[in-house]
Image 1 (cartoon, rainbow, N blue to C red):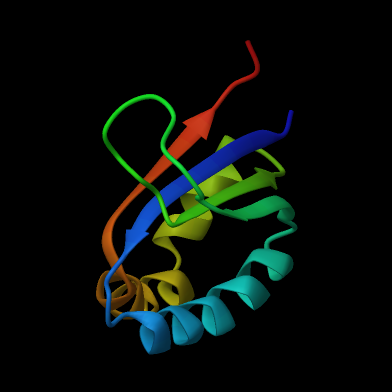
Image 2: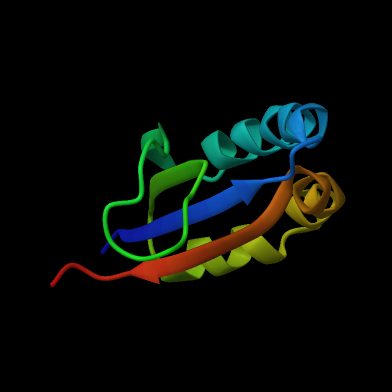
Length: 98
């Protein structure tokens, strides 16, 4: 059964270059892992709550184990410094269909 990953994040004001490097490194890794990117969105307005997200990404992995393997892979771990410079904060969730 496939697994859905949702990531929301707030970008650092000076993180544009790091985001480009992070995306350039991670998107090919996602494709190699058989991940289907269902959508990448820019936050526009907070309607409920206090947080505003600059980025929302929704991805479909082959299964939860593939998701865990991706996040702990040597290639992905090498991209984490770019992620940390790009985002003020980031949250990633594994999701099930209700």
